[in-house]
Amino acid sequence: MTLDQTNQRVGVSVTATLPTTFLRVLQVNELTISVTNQVQRANAGLELALVLDVTGSMATNNRIGELRSAATDLVNILFGPGRAPPKNLWVSIAPYAAEVNIGKTRANWLAAGSYDATKWASQGWRGCVLARTQPQDQTDTPPASAPFKPFWSPNNQYTGTNNDNPWTPTNITDDGTYRQTNDMAGPNLGCPPPIMPLTNDRAALLAKIAGLKPVNRGGTMANQGLQAGWFTLSPKWRGLWGGTTPDTLPLDYGTPDMSKAVVLLTDGNNEWYKYKPQGDYTSYQRLSDGLLGTTDTNQVTTAINNRMLTLCSNMKAAGITLFTITVGDSASSATRALYESCASPGPNHYFDSPTPADLQTVFRTIAGQLSNLRIIR
Image (cartoon, rainbow, N blue to C red; front, side):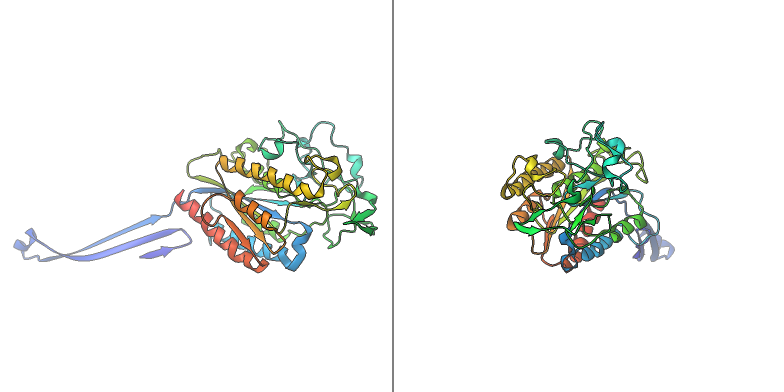
């Protein structure tokens, strides 16, 4: 047997000496027979969204560094040793914090009259958006039917109390440069990096992963990140993303020999960063605005979790496989149960990574399962 890993081929050569029957009358008692054959593995296609937590707590114990290393491993395993990218493997990356970033070039996805460039002054709108109103924050409806509104933080000169302790910010301008501090202000405060839509450009994916850094303020709203990942996989968004994503993608749900999957990671609970009295500004605006049906900080996590569970169910009903990961010791038992419920049924779809260093093993395991999806679909 010969194995050609680069070209995904297996060759088999068999040589045997067989006794003859009729040929014996010609004094030929044996014949040597050789047979050679070669098969090439036919991989099914995969559209994969990596939905990654980049909140400020990811700086703790170098979680963000371990995430970058583990996600790099996953991409390299899926793409394999060959230089040419597999023609039917496409990956997107959706970083999230308390909101998501659709990209500053996509102002045409915003609701009419919602964008006023003067509000962001010299900084400009960075591309983050508010959550859409319920139930559109749990669907894959495209922007033509459910447009976004741009995120604009009024925290420019905020003074108040942080977790009931007196606090006055140093008024550091949030210019997109990561600083491990909450003492910042600016119209894009807490806005994470933009979504990278489906691409089969390995180098671009690895560069995106290498550039991920934590983003302070706002809180953690994994439901927003998960929905953004869905946007990159939904056929309703076909032709909208542009860039290196072909106009033929994403493919229809249920396309033969094509799987759709999401890897969702967090290092903590869904929660609002507790600036008093009105709460920090997020994709759901102020906590005091009550857009999640409550203004109680003790109830808001439950409200976000419930919307996330509905979102998970809707995605699984569409045929998307969900892998979920909690990392570190910050996630509560309720959050671990949430992520286990969100994951697709079956073994090894939910992973708890007690330490950031365990992430590499987790991502390699998921990469193996995703590779199997491509083989046995």
